[in-house]
Amino acid sequence: MSVVHSDILKEHGFYIGMEDDSRCSRDDLFTTSLAFFHDISNTLFDDDSPFCIEKSIVNQCSDENALVECKLQPKAPVRIDDALRYTMSKWHEYLRYENPTFEHIETELNNDGASIRLLTISESGKSAITIEFTLLPYQ
Image 1 (cartoon, rainbow, N blue to C red):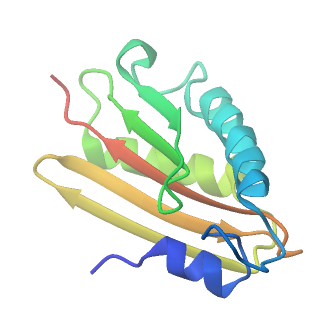
Image 2 (image 1 turned 120 degrees about the horizontal axis):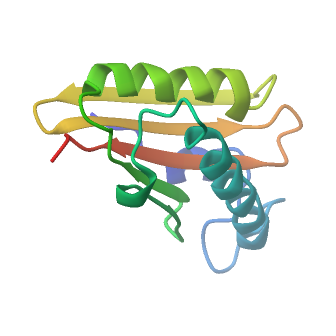
C-alpha cells in the first residue's frame, strides 16, 4: 500500500490546507518543486541517459503527493529494470538532499513499466519534495 505523502508533509509542518499555522507554505513547496524540476531535467537527460528526451515529460504539479511528475520513455533496447537502476543512481548521486531529515522511497516494477514514488525532507526541515517517476515500456 502506498504511503500518502501529503499526510507526512503535514506531520512535518508543511502547509497543505487553506488555513494552517505550518512553518512552510505552498509557495515554499512550489519553489522547491521548481528547483527539482530543473535539476531532474538537467540530470536525467545527460549524454549517457537511457531515456528518449523527445518522448519523456517532466511536469511541476500542484498535488502534494507528486509535486514533480516524470514520465520517462527508455530508448530501445533499454530494459525497464536498467532504466530504474539508472534513475535511482542519479537520485542518490545528484538529486537527493545530502542528509535528509526524512526520506521515503517506493519502487514498483511490473509488466507495464515501473514507478518510483519518493518524498524527502531537507536536513533543516525547511524544504521538502515529492516526486513520482513513471518509467514507460518502450513503444
